[in-house]
Image 1 (tube, rainbow, N blue to C red):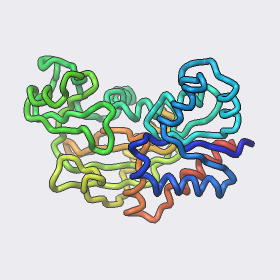
Image 2 (tube, rainbow, N blue to C red; image 1 turned 30 degrees about the vertical axis):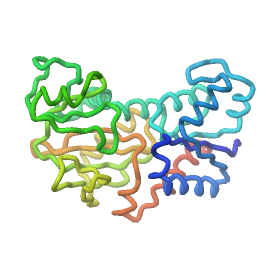
Image 3 (cartoon, rainbow, N blue to C red; image 1 turned 90 degrees about the vertical axis):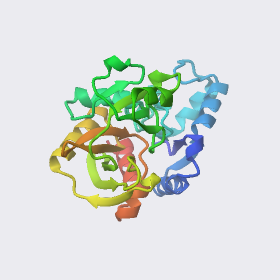
Image 4 (cartoon, rainbow, N blue to C red; image 1 turned 60 degrees about the horizontal axis):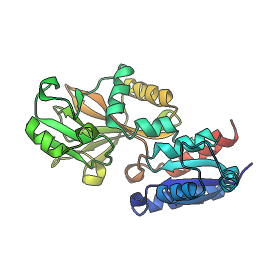
Amino acid sequence: MNNRALLIYAPEDIEKNKWFADRLVELASDHGIRMKMMTSRELKDRLTSAQAVPGNGLLSAAVINFLDCISFVINRSRDEELSLFFEKHGIPSYNNSETVRLGNDKLLEHGFFRKLGLPVMETACGDALEEEIPFGPPFIVKHRRGHGGSQVFKAGSYAEALELMGPSKDKWIIQKMCDEPGCDLRLYMLGGRVIAGVLRRSEEDFRSNFSLGGKAELISPDPGICGQAEKIAESLGADYIGIDLIRHGGSFVFNEIEDAVGARMLYEVTDLDVAGMFMKHIYEKTFQN
């Protein structure tokens, strides 16, 4: 078997995820795999200079030799083009390209949840006209590709929402605000199963993200919710993701999929070695299936 692999991060994410990245490299070595960490920019530059831009079917000899050494890729960069490129050349990517695509576009996530018949908040694309939005303020305004609570805002009016979005309104969504802001449930999923549920609360912000100062508490999620989440993971073929739900009308509704889900909160509130579990899952799926 090929004994090399790639771990890909966006350049801006390297420093804050260094411990987890180093742990994955260490664990890969324990399995006899030499894992190289690269930024998405470095990798794309390498492929472009070798005339192998993702999506281009023509490969140089240098790229063919490069790919021949790689057994799998862990793509934590949120760039679906990279996952798709490796998949097209027979190299498994964790997560796969469809999970990366959907898990980094909040409008696509919403449509996907609705297609599966799951409860969601009312949502409109940011370029919808005021008369086409079937719900009133306050609004939650989110960039479609935002993550970690960034580029999420509260707007008291449609005019304020327009100002927050700026000229590229099609890159944003507008959602009805839930009636229990500052509280959400993060389900951590590995291999299609829920491995932990963490309730996050914030007394000071409508966003409950742990990275923004929210409080985290390990809970046992309702089996019905777990079953719905597992339906999502199965439909996507997802490997390691987070699924976030928010409280509205006295129950949880589905909110977002986190493709490159972090592990900091899990290590804080559980004794799970998530990196070890993830690497074991990857090794078995790649080499033992």
